[in-house]
Image (cartoon, rainbow, N blue to C red; front, side, top):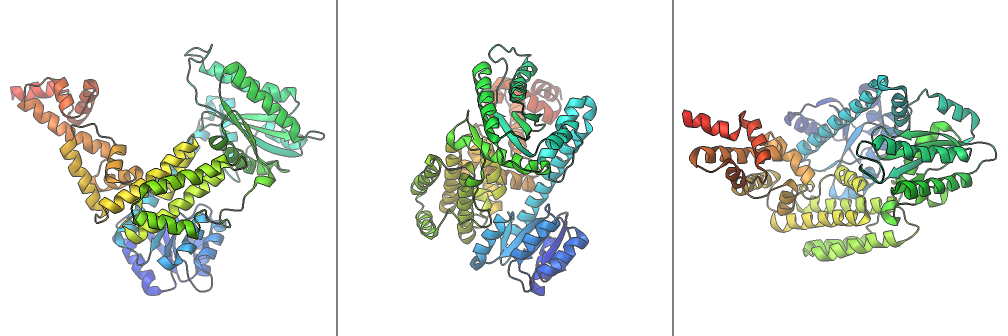
Amino acid sequence: MNIIVLDDEPIIRQGIIHKIRQTRLPVTVVAEGGDGFKGLELMKQWLPDLIITDIQMPGMDGLTFIRQATEVDPKAKFIIITGFDQFDYAQQAIRYGVSNYLVKPVEDDELYTTLSTLLDRKEAEKQTDQMIKELKSVAETSQEAAKQQALTQFLQEADFSVAVEELDNLAAHANSFTAVVIQLEPFKVPHQSFGIEEEELLWFAIKNIVTERFLASRIHGILVHHSLRRYELVYVLGLGQGQDAAAVASTLESISFGIRKYLKLSVTIGVGLYQVQIAKLQESYREAKQIARNAILHGSNRIYQSNQAMHYPQEAQRKSFIGNEDGKLLGDWIHKLETDKIHRWIERRLGAIVQDPGSTYLLVEWFCVDLYLYLNKYLLANATDSKWAIGELADLQRELQQSMAWDDIVERMKHLVTNMIGLLSKHSSLEGKEIMEAVRLYLERHYAEPIHLQQIAERFFIHPNYFSKRFKEKYGESFVDYLNGVRMKEAAALLLETDLKVREVSERVGFEDAAYFGSVFRKRYGETPKQYRDRHLVE
């Protein structure tokens, strides 16, 4: 990973570069500069993966640089360096898409953790890119499959052009375009009259209802079955002379009714804004997906229509949900370790958003992000590493997108608070490495008990995703593999030193299923528990 470092103070800049090199991570500092103008010049020259930048610099400050740099390379990542007195600037940078920041003076461990996380994220993005490339390579499976994959890419990726005849025809005969997201509740076969081997037939019935209803309304379009999201259909449509959005709304009501009545499936439909250019369909698609998330607030089996009147300010311009008074209240409750009061406050605030019939899911997401930022700021000032308790912002955003009900979101936010206060009250004096060592000792003493990652996270008030990454870095294997290693070592000793049956040994080391125990044992030792015992008895 190639890095550019920007700071107007050469000593600080050189210190950061030295610390980066000391991490021994697979990263290279390719250039450095003292202001945003130099940074833009270096970006065009080096095309770095990551830019580490100070906020306050002469000429062009860090925020202005980030805003312009994202136009040069939207995929570039940023780490901002800030002092506690500059935290409001850091919040604004985060709203520009920056999810990583370091507080002066930059600590070695915090820099190492942040760079490691970005390397992990880069690898994940590489895998995602590879997955998309693989979608392209399977075109030979069938012409229809290839078309669906190409249309999925067209909807997903800005500036991606696709040669699909139906799309060209739509562009030629229509003067306004939109995307409709049809989100089905996950289902399994057998379902109603569809047998266990008739899932494809059920999908045919769903798609037939959609296409036949639009055909009957003489609304032309293309049905896309999303290649990466199994239960998502997208209808890309165009309206010609004399057609309007009212006809689309009526047709969607008929589609929703047909799927619910005849197939007994729940369905949520989101409609994006109409565009005069087909090239802007990606914007409609993103809006349709976002508006369909309103089902979390107002229920499924409904049609959610995006319109200009309900558009909110851009993320970077909006006001925080956590005002000064809220900040004082939260700070006082956290200081007094009053978890219940914060939980009730979260329930009231999210409840108020949900109960407002005009609210949208976007407001819920903004509230959660603002609360995370506040908690993160508090922990930075009062604990060693905030991410141990509340994870990273990207973790929260991913969890929010995976939530299927608003009370799930309430519980996620309450859990962050519980973790945070637990960390402050019981582990505030522990460093990250000491927390992992405490977990390791717990596993070696309690391996015979039912143990899973979420349980450990709750016991030690740590975020499971962040802990899992750091644990693997320190011990060279995942949490589960390490736990199984401890259990297998004890099982091997019991097999040789006692006459216990294999099933009894399995239970003694924490396995309820003897067959699963046998497969884990064989994977580690290359033979079954019985073969292991017999071989050593002979020796």
